[in-house]
Length: 380
Image 1 (tube, rainbow, N blue to C red):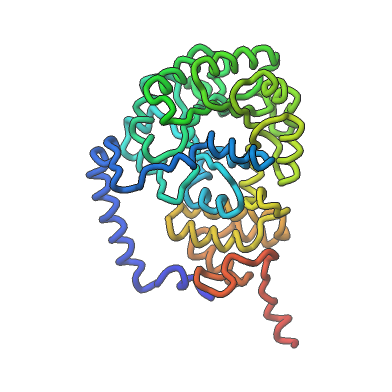
Image 2 (image 1 turned 90 degrees about the horizontal axis):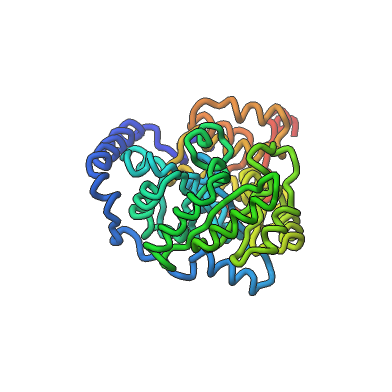
């Protein structure tokens, strides 16, 4: 099967100009349509999708809430929808920088997209001041189920700007931002703060108590300091120490790569939910109990990413992560060596039985359906 199943070659030229024309129109009109929420475009958010309500429901069911955390560039709309097909309860957007979002039309167009299926959605915001945080929330709050404030990102560029993990030493500022949001919006917005632990757990506990007093609805704790490498195991004892004193729900983050990990972490820490980031990037069906990414998820991702639109290199990276543990080195290198979307589709069709939406059995296979080598077929 050729790439023409996804794209009609004789219409690509017309399609390109149609997209360009539409994009230019959006760029012209975006200030009015983005800065003033238009609730005609999406129905109001249902309270049942409020992250707090979901966490409470999961507790009633005797299990932790399964949460896919924010991934820079990668937790875009197509991947978020895929995750929900595999028992993920709450999904985060990538971290969005408030300063750029409120000032740049291009940032608003590229950084945030959603639809009526995109629930329960928490948009994570990177900010170091109340003004930018409130301005961004004003733009997006009708379209999300929760707001997360990033106090854990260790990327040096963000830390230098006073964003992410830099806020772990500014607990009063974080409390001020949380209080400003809750004062303005009250219970109409679910507010979360994602933190890392300090070397001295007493500092973390002081931080948590202060943001709880400011009105935060729940807290996510990554069991590493801002300087701890990801190769070092997460410190679940510190997460447990936070949970033991917290008066709001606590989500554990770090080292969740299987469903068994999720239950083990929740049991040990007592947390109401478990967040996976790198785990779901490699295996979006993790919370459904799959050891590796099922082939059906690959087919669904192809359909979602080409339907909604996702940059080629992001599609390629997702597929590389999802298949990295299952392909031999030669095939994995070939996948990563493709230089265009059409080439990548043709490569998949050459090596695998890649079903399209509408085909019988689409999205159902578990094992990789390799195509037989032509030299082998000729000997039959």
